Image 1 (cartoon, rainbow, N blue to C red):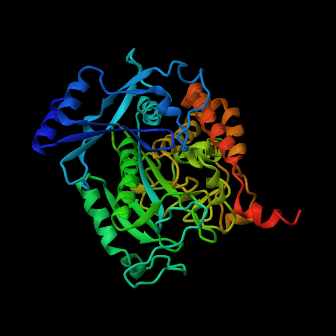
Image 2: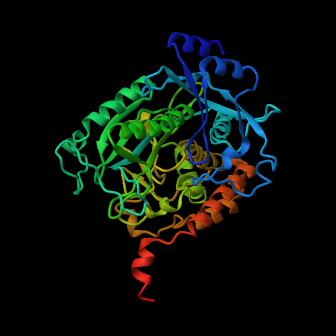
Image 3: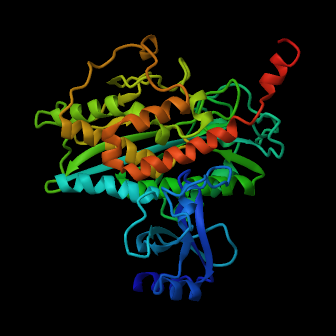
Length: 447
């Protein structure tokens, strides 16, 4: 409380945005005058209906009396002092702070995504394990699109031309949007978002931002804030920044690769390496857990109907959970590194995933592999695209596997699994009502 008060006073804050991520990773919450915010913190006054955590991407609420109360009871928000930051794009002094939701009986809301990640991290803590992660987030810049019936197109850069060809790692192609990225870097610095490398990806006006590795919860918070930051910077330059998994026809999809490593709480050493520098058994157990359980975790890694358009053969995205050393065709890549930095890169996750849930799911799979002492399949050399497509191909298939896994229900909570299923089935029902332009073009007069 004192830390927050001092921050508000030091920066002469007028308003405070109280943020909480919903299931899709969308920022929900309240905006209050600073003094009102301080009063509300001490009286359980920052309240929201629990149903916010089962709100769909369309803004609807599923018919539910099981996961949340039929009376749509309130929960209250507890701000996390470590997350208070300036909102750098407002003229008036404004702060933002990420909150955790609690029931009025002081119990955490178990279907809230930040709570889910905290619960997984507590399992690691009990074992004396400290996971570090480093997300890599891809996104497209596109022209402002006010009619969803029209396809997206890349924006015009400094040259006055639209990018149409693929410019992987093109420096000049990134510089086309220099003013936008100058804002992104300035905004991130003001919020202590620890971004590292910016590069051009394989799609037209597709970019990737890498984060420096760090504690899982801290990096999830930063990825959550980063998405909002990039979208805001884009709007300032009359451009949309989209984290859709597959926004444009004929272009690659956007991922959120998650590098994950493990250190000992007592000695701080990388537990994925042996003293001689070779892979440890624990590292192989971790990989095996990812191999076994990731396909059933897909509603958290590929959460939307659009997500599965990205996961196709020869598309810079994986189709299975094979692993390999410095192999970008597999779902689980082990980059070349020294023993202190040994890690595995989960390449399955889409950019459209909620970062809290994606990191929680990925770490949960590794945890299960380590506690069950699973053994991985041999590493793949050459292209993994020649091997079977074993990841789910649709959200329907994903939900079926998600609900069929006892281990997932045990580690993430049965109530949370029910909540995800409820939300995603409601979204699928809404999607089934939509008739696409492809159907009109090819079926209208031909069948």
